[in-house]
Image (cartoon, rainbow, N blue to C red; front, side):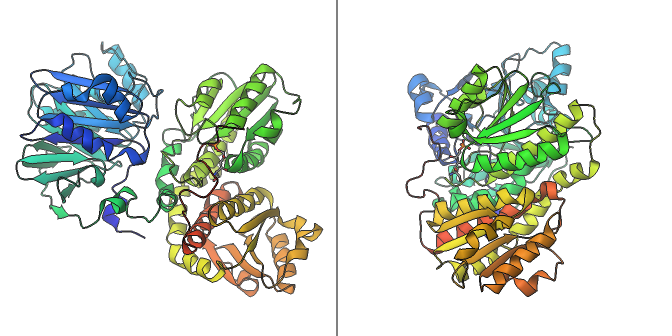
Length: 609
Ligand code: M6R
C-alpha cells in the first residue's frame, strides 16, 4: 500500500490547476493541465485574469480545445484551468469549467459533487440569478456572487458553508490579485516556489515547478498570492500549515503511488461507492429517473462482460426487493434473437463505457420494439447514455485499467438503489436494514482492502497453477463468474466460474491437488450447502481458498487459505466479496510480470461487434 500523502492526491472525477506569479499564466496552465490527461476527461477550460476576466472552454481533448480556441491568446499572470469528467450535464462547451455567474466578475473550477445543488439553484433563481449550465457546480459561482461585498475569501467561505457534498475549488475574481482555493473530500494542494504559487488537484500537475507542497485539509480555504499563502477555516480562523517536500517521481504520483491503475482503482472503491450513493439514499431513495417506473411489468437487463455479471446480481436484487420479474441477457444474444419485448417492459442496459457496440445495438432493438429503456452508465454523455429514455449514472470516475473494478461495484450499488426505488414506486415500504447496509459498504470495503498483504501472500502461493475454479451460490454465483473473469483477463490463467451446486454435474471431474478452487462461502443463505461442496472438494484433494465471514471458525477445517470479510446481508455481500477476488487476480498477474492495465487482445471500450 502506498504512502498516505499520495493516496489523498487523486480525485476520481476531474482535474484542477492554478497559477499566480510574474510569468504569463496560460502556457504554464496548459502544460500543467496536460499532466492530468492520464486521468481521463471529456472537456477542458481555462480562465485568466488580465484587465478583463477571459474564459476559454470546450468539450474534447486539451489539444483539440487549444487548436480550436488558442489558450495562448489569454494574457495575464493569474489563472485557473480544468479538465472535466462529466457528472451532472453532458460534456459540452457550456457545461465545461470554468463557470461564471451573472455579472462575469468571477470564474470558478470545481471537482466533486454538490449534493444540494438543485435546492440551491431553485433558491438562487427565485432571487433573480440566471443559470446557463446543467452542472451542479454553477450554484457555487452564483452563491459566491451573492455573498460578495468586497471580501473575496469571505464570500467564498459563506458560499461553501451553504453547500453539502464534496469540493475542491479554485476561484478568481476581477477585483482581486489572488486565487481562492478550498477543499472538502476532493483533494487540493498548493505548490510554493519563491515568488510563484501553484495549485492543483493532483501533485503530478505541478511537480515540474516545485516539490514543496501545502496539503489542504477538508473545510480549509486558502488565499493564494504570488509567493504568499494564507490558510483559514471557513469561519475566518487562521491555520498554520507546514510546507512538505514530495519525494516521489511523476509516474508514481500519476498512479497515486500504486504500481498500476488497476490497483489504484481497486483502492478507490470506498470513495467511488460514496459517490454513487451521494444524495440518493436516505429514508427514501432519490434516483431522479425520468417517467414513472411503477407501470413496468417485467424488466430485462442486457449487458456484456463484467456489466453482464452486475446484471445477474441485479436480477436477484430486483426480484427479491422490488418483486418484479426480471430476465438477463447478453447484449450480443439479445440483439440477434427475436426478443419478445414491448411497451410494458423496462429494458435496462448496463455499460461502464456507454459505447459497447453490442449493448448499444440491444438498446436500439428494445426501443424499436416499444420497450422503455434505462441506462446504468459511468461515462456521462456517452452514446448509450444519450440514447436511453432515462438512466442512472454510477459516478465511478474514469476507469483506466482495462479490467473493470470500481465501475462494477458502483453498478451493483446503482442496481440496489434501482431495486429499492422500484419497490418504493409501487407503494411498498423499504427495509431500513438494507438501506443502512448499503450505506455501510464503503467502510466494509475499506476493511477488506486492508488485508491486501495477506491476499498477496495467497496469490504468491497459487500463481503457478494453470487452472482455477470459482464457486458461489445465489447472489454470489455471479461473484464467482466475475472473480474468474478478472483472473483470466489479466493473468491469462484459465479460470471458470460456476454455481457451486453445478460442480457435481461436470466440473468435479477436474478436481485434484493441482486445482485451486475459490469458494465464496460467507455466512448467509446457502452457507451450509457451500460447506458441503467444500467437503466434496477436500475429499478430492483440491486446494481451497475461501472467502469467509469474520468469526467463522468452521471454515478453517476445510480451507487451505481463508480471506475474511465483514458480515453483511446477502443483498449487499457481492460488493464486499468481489474485493479480495480483484486483489487476488491483480497480485497473480503482477507476480507473472504482465501488463496488468493493458492485457493482451483486450480494449477498454469494445466499439466493434
Ligand atoms: O463498457 P462496458 O461495461 O459496456 O464493457 C463491457 C465489457 O467489455 C467489459 O466489462 C469487459 O468485460 C471488461 N474488460 C471486464 O473487466
